[in-house]
Amino acid sequence: SSPSMLSVAAKIREKVDSLLYRGFIANTGWEQLYQYPRYLKALVSRYETAELNPQAERERSIVWDKWWNKYLQVAEKKSLAVGNDAATSNALKEFRWLLEEFHVSLFAQQLGTKKSVSEKRLIKLFEQLV
View 1 (cartoon, helix red, strand yellow):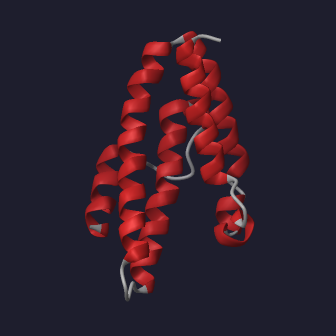
View 2: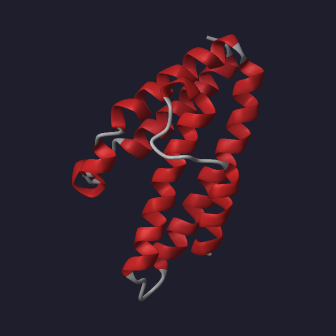
């Protein structure tokens, strides 16, 4: 494996860890659990595509990393905040699962997405969170 493929493998491992952590079944809900096979197939597709087109992987990865890091920052702030209401928690969950759909659309378009997703939609939802 080339160094770039090792990097892709590490990113995919992080993504797997964000989906399959201790207690994920209890925390996730059936609607999202039903989507897990597609999310995992998207990771396989990402790896295969990265081998064929490393430049596209780098470009998509920059976009993905930007959004994932925004989510992590907001999630951390919200978890530390006192008095978060259910609406904030639900909006954060909605954003998180929309990000999963965005990941599929970036790296495995052929699998399709459950709902329409774009950076414009992510921006709109993100602005409601902050």
